[in-house]
Image (cartoon, rainbow, N blue to C red; front, side, top):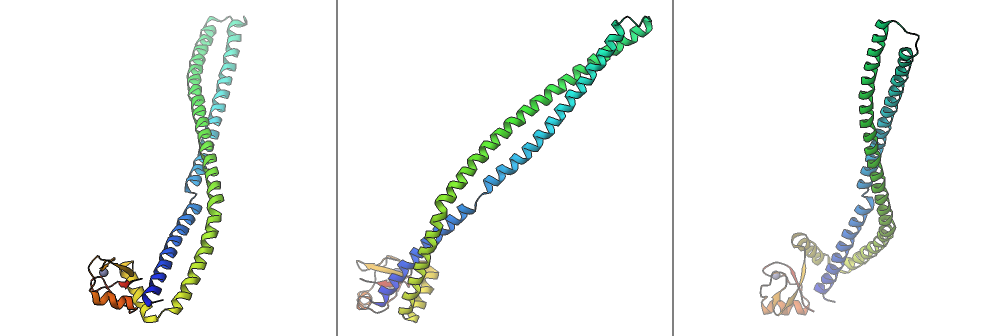
Amino acid sequence: MSLAGQLYKLQQLDLELQDKQQELSDVENKLGDNKALLAAETKLASQKEQLEDARKKQKSSEWGLDDLQEKIRQVDSKLYGGKTKDPKELVNLEKEVKGLKSQIRTKEDSLLGLMSQVEQIESDVRATVEESELLKREWAQIQETLGPRKGELEIELAGLKGGRSRLVQQIDSEAFNIYERIRLARGQAVVKVERGRCLGCHIAVPTSQWQKARAGDLIQCNNCSRILYLE
Ligand SMILES: [Zn+2]
């Protein structure tokens, strides 16, 4: 195989390596990306705290209401029990009942507000539970499919790297350095010549140049410096 042919083969290997490495890093990113799931779990924990808090407030409001209703029963029994005859005291008791009734109305309104708050948070919690279950299933599926793919890619990459270093050992070191330098600067280091043109820059290659390249000399394009390869 000509030197250019070896470098062309090396380039094919390098492109394959690059693709596999890219795929491996995409796979690793997906495997490690559980941000959405963590966010859903954090949201759920905070909603559950809110729910507990709101339920406590509701309970304490219900107890407050029970107390007021108990008080009103006691005053009512004094008012209508027949034991109290003093008109002044009766008027005071009526006033007290009126005051208690007004307190009860306020308390009932606030209890209704608290109850609808609890319902709202309960429905938020259900939605977040569903969301996080879905994300968990998706996460498990990603691990199941991409986990093995990661292993395959690692084996493929190790094989390609081994093949590359064996090939590099066979290549003249000066030619290899030229290849690496052009690859770094231009991405593609070795290009074919087709219909007398360099496929890297599409400029015509002088006949003498491509004839030398065909004969096996290491020839670089006068225009773009890429190594010319003729099969
Ligand atoms: Zn060129």
